[in-house]
Length: 220
Image (tube, rainbow, N blue to C red; front, side, top):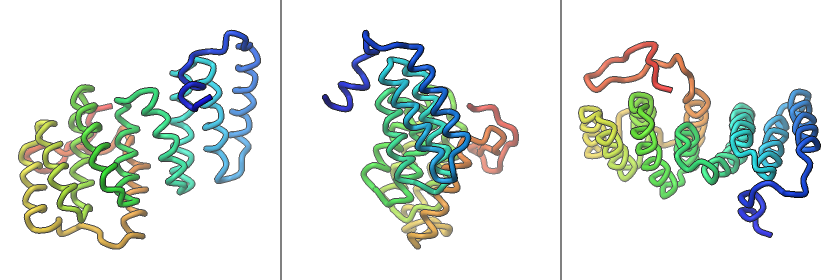
């Protein structure tokens, strides 16, 4: 049976919800007591179990905790794998699409970065969190050395109603990159990982379209 058949076929009619809850509790306890580097694995297993039992919202919550743990432990590819599980369940998951775009940039996966950037911008516009997304996308463009990504980022900023920021990014693309673009692979990977970890900080300053920043913005 395929992965999708197992996890999207709904709850097993022969399953025992009490047993599932007990196993989820055990996995949560395992995560609390796990050594560094293994916390995300326990939460990932809990997400798989919840999803197999038909508890998709609970599964997404566990997967989110797994991603956070893997990012903190600098396990970028593990975080990417779990993030893709969330997208299968919730294709417009805004924070997850942001994380995937940062991870794509870190790994220089150009095609996937463009795909996730597009989906992130659209989901953010639909979800009325344009300021937060524009802040993230402008920062991605600032460090990217890819003119193709910069053009796509400018289009995303236009979609989010940040035309002046979009013009800045197009100017960078015309110049080849922004003055702050990162060409070193190791430095780019580290910077993108740090940005992915910070991306959901509710207290982060968000850009506006006239330059400067505004503190304590409320986009979620």
